[in-house]
Length: 459
Ligand code: ARG
Image (cartoon, rainbow, N blue to C red):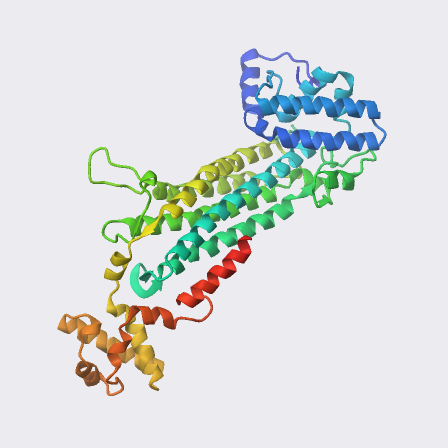
């Protein structure tokens, strides 16, 4: 028997009814919110008792019944019935089986609309906390890598062209800050999620004197929602969650791409732990970075989940509409995707070993052409002019077919008298990196300070 069968005659074609049931039911996926659903019901049972709608004995019966239902879900012994349309009906059905009459009073003044709105918020809070913790683990691995290899210098790129030398630690830490912003966005989303919709009824509100502020306190929520129509239809926090996680996925896809490139034998800058790579069924020499290719690929799925939900929400009339049942699967899929992706990325980062010699070998003195211009600036040449003269030196070196550092002092002075006898001191990669010592730059001292800041954020 359904929960809402009173006004139906039940004379349906059996096949059509079965098909419709399959289409309509959400228990298959929303059962995972059972702990949230029961926590909400515990708070609601206390609230309707406080409002004088049930006796304390009835309340206690409900509470112990709910504890029993919860234990069955926890242990996997809960037995679903065909009538269990969703998690809300399943819990109420079994509660009533266990305790009889008082179970039928629990839903007084409540609707599945304010109930489901609450459940997903409670569920989301925990999901966000778990994800933020796992993002933190990646950040710790990045810091550990940066601290383990403080002096290693690698080529930095713009347009994927060799640009300027930077510290390997600086490159690693660049991902720390992306992830820090991701966590910040998740925290922000959690704050807006942590508002109580229960007490909004189906849409118009609750006619009984339930103390919503007390329910919110009991559930650790910041406040009751201010408008019941909005409360039963608001899914902003889910869209925000899917955006924050899609962007997190985009960030991890960029890290994935960097590692795919840097671990390619043509670069050979880093090796990733063997366990995160796979071989080829045809080519015996292959060691493919599948973990990071998947990190790149999963972003597509996470973005798809965001796009899917926004499309469901667009143009929905006030207030609750069954379309909203489509909100959960993308959110669950994103959480499930991240539950594996994040630890894999943390593992890959922890397993990364840099190959300093390969990075050194890829450093071309032409990457110090900016330093050459800066050298002229220090000698009083305006930067625009200095840039031009340095460019002429690059061209001269190309003509002679030698690296920029192998032009003679005479070559330099032939280009401009502004180049001094000491011009070749410019060609020192370590000195170039060390010069960039302003806060946030790549000098070892700056990176050390950066890591210190990062650590205070994690503690
Ligand atoms: N399973 C439903 C959902 O996820 C619960 C709310 C149903 N409300 C209703 N009036 N049928 O949205």
